[in-house]
Length: 149
Image 1 (cartoon, rainbow, N blue to C red):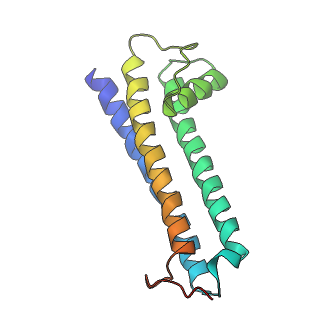
Image 2 (image 1 turned 90 degrees about the vertical axis):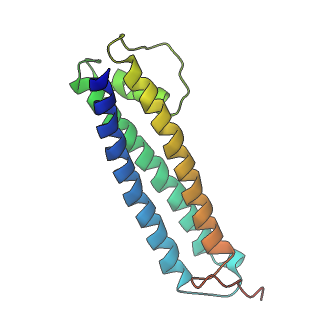
């Protein structure tokens, strides 16, 4: 059990670092766009694109994090092929848990820890998207309310 907790801890640290990089990119995008400070925030064509790109960035980041866990499952011998490992990892990370593919007793705790990590990661993702929307549509880069022009 200690071995599984140690492996999960390493994977959680890796996925957290990957997610932090994606968050920094999202923050950079919104800061760059906010420096333009055009008139009415809703009418600026670049803002919806930044929100959409942020959602896409975070989706791709989460998919990459699933791949990290799937690779670990393969390296540990829990799966022979990548596709079932990816599928199982995605189902675990999203806490969907179909149950059509399950791990043996040796690794089942690992999948539970992946699900717990996924809950935190998706909550963090939601916070990032909300932050981008707030920065783009409610405040300028200094935190002052925008003029409603």
